[in-house]
Figure 1: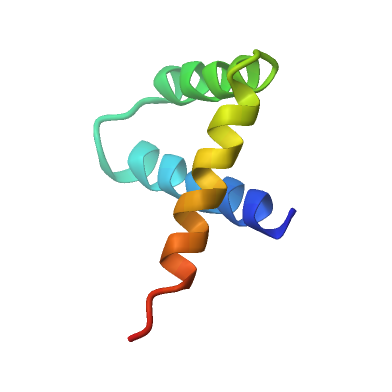
Figure 2: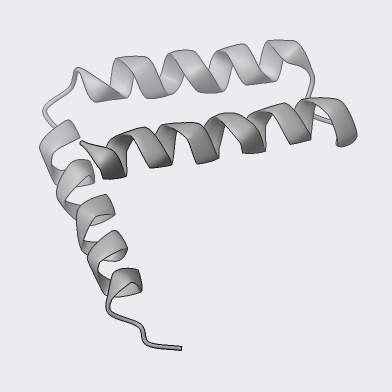
Length: 64
């Protein structure tokens, strides 16, 4: 759950920065958000979740 909340916050911050600084307008941000929302309800959601968790675990094992 903590990884999901962190990912959502990170992606939300990125969308905000893109809207404010880059060429991403509000309509693009809404389309991206809706795409993610509807993608979460498909049969691909568990695979995407496993992939994101695997990447997060891999990053968590890196020692600096």
